[in-house]
Length: 137
Ligand SMILES: [Zn+2]
Image (cartoon, rainbow, N blue to C red; front, top):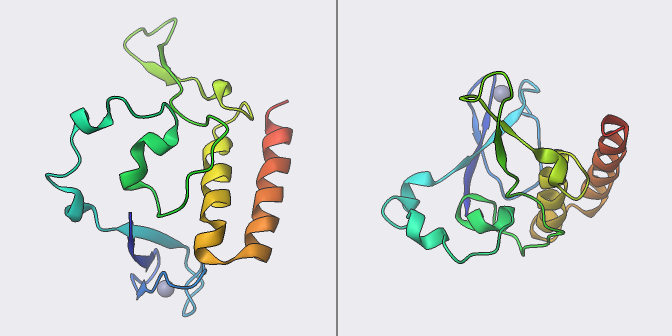
């Protein structure tokens, strides 16, 4: 999916997503990625999902444009809670890293070529792997 623009969480400024950036140049606000979800209306239906591979790339239409790279992240089960069976808990321990961070790491890795941010992305992937290892103990 094409990124429509980046939006500053402080001032609401819309910025181009053509170059890698994660903070607003005016006020340092964190940037949210905004997608053109309206373009999917009427095109993405539940029946389109059946038969697709059971990874996070099953939902490619709502992920940034990138060549899928996967170790099987995503598609983890929702399990009913023991004490509150009507509350469901996502079992992210079944991801390759045993953490929800596997999705972000894989998406960042796949997007690396798209955004040509080798140095920054490499650092972030390494940081994500370190924090995943620390929190997974
Ligand atoms: Zn701003």
